[in-house]
Structures are given as C-alpha cells and as structure tokens.
Image (cartoon, rainbow, N blue to C red; front, side, top):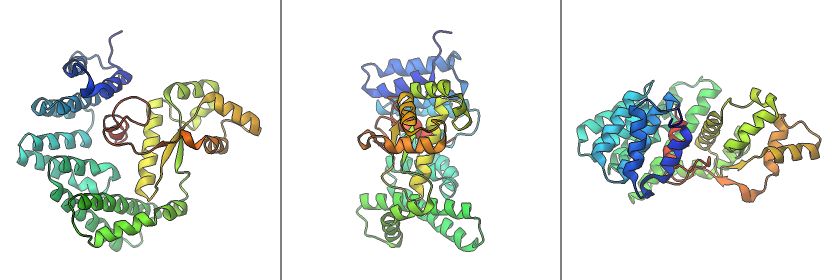
Length: 328
C-alpha cells in the first residue's frame, strides 16, 4: 500500500512536532494509520502513538495525550516500561496523583537493574516531584551498594554492571540536588569523585574509543551492498545499527565515559582509506583506524538534549527517536 506509515515518516512527524502550523493534522495522521492498520512495521505502532502523545503534550492537551499513552501500552506486543512511565507522568500532570504514583512505583525496581530507567526520574521531575525523584535515586543507590557488599564473589560482569549503575544514579541525583539548591551530602561527594575519575575509569575499562563510527542510513545500505561480508559484523538493518550505537554510548557513559561522540562514515571514504592503507575495508582494525582518521570537526557530541534533534539524522527529537527505541 502506498499510504503505509513508515518509521521514517513517524520520525519526520516527530521532528515537526508542535512547531508545525497544524500539529492536530500530524496527530491525526499517526492515529488514523494505527486505527486502519497502515503502520508499515507493526512493531512501530506503539512508537507512532508515543510520538502523537508528545505532540499533544506540547500542545497542552494532557487529557488526549494520556488516552493515547494508555493505548500505546495496549498496542505493544510486549510489556513496555517506557510507555508505562510516560503514562504515569501524564497521570500526575492530569491531577490523578494516586494513579500516577502507582504506575511509576510499580516500575521503581528498574532503577536498581536498568541504567536507562532514569526516564522514571524524568517523569517525576517534570511533574514537580523532584523530592520524590531524589528519594528514589537514594534508595536505588542504597540497594545497589548493599548488593555489592553482600555479593563479594560476583562475576566481573556483575561488578561492572553495578559500577555503571552507581555512577549513573549518583550523577542524576547530584544534578537534581544542585537544581534544588541542596548542600552536598555523602552521595554528592561520591558523584564528584566518580566524575573526576571518569576518564581514568574509561581507559581502565578498555571498552573502545569514546568516539564511535556511525553509518547514516544511505551509507549503511550502501555498505552492505558493496561489502556483503560486513553483514557478519553489522546488524541486518540500519534501525538496529543506530540502536546498537545508542546502547553502546549509554553503557560507556554509565561506566564513566565522558566526551562521547560519533563520526559519520561514508562508503567512498572507507574505500579510499583502505586503499591508501593497503588494508581490508571489512577488517575491524581498519574500521577503527578509519574512524580515528576522520576530522575532529565532524564529531557529533552525545547525548543531545531530550528535546534536541536526534544524533542519528532522522530529524526527530532525541526523546522520541533513539532514546526510547534503544530501551527494548
């Protein structure tokens, strides 16, 4: 069908958002495609609805935004914690405090296991509940630190995961408390120490460069056509490629990485680099060296602001593009 709603179109609508002269028409386009079964990839149905939710919320239509957020949860093939958190925040902002807190409280344990779950904190903060957000972050830090003390023989991976969680939660808590004008406490001091040591921690982890190589959509498609062997070391689709890059950046940041960014690769550029170096363009070492060779001026800093244009080039806002879609 020629009128299928593709992921690219959803992203385009998200980029237009409230700045469009007719945001209601954008919402109608998204919702009608869902109603009529015209979403090209059924897995994007909830995503389309969440983009509509964002447009409605920006327009001040909190009631309709809440209705669509509720529907987005129902449309997801699996449980979607991010959509549930959005709904919880909207319940709070619609004056339904008990229901909103119940929704978010049910998700609260994720703060102890999932580095991306700070979206719960975002919803609380945006709803004027900064005190509760700090309380939840404190509780999560207490729990993780206690777990590390009692599981002294945990695997190296488990220890790394705990360190990532402690770093990310401590920084978010520290930022919130600074916004509230609160004096430093023990966890604030910990956040300062971890931030000061972050570059050393990143070097010790040896998890790769702080700047990652990213292939824009047209280049990614051309990459797999020119060198089919790349399919063995790259995701099968561009969408999965950008999600993989986003997750790698999230994990590196949580473990102490700073000054993170991306450089955009081109097929012609890689081919020319490999020819000059006399190396195989499909070799991982060649790809790393090619990324290092790219001009520093071409680095895209990561992460963008939640309301800024997404780093992947879709044109959509970060919070409605790679940020939530990498949390599957």
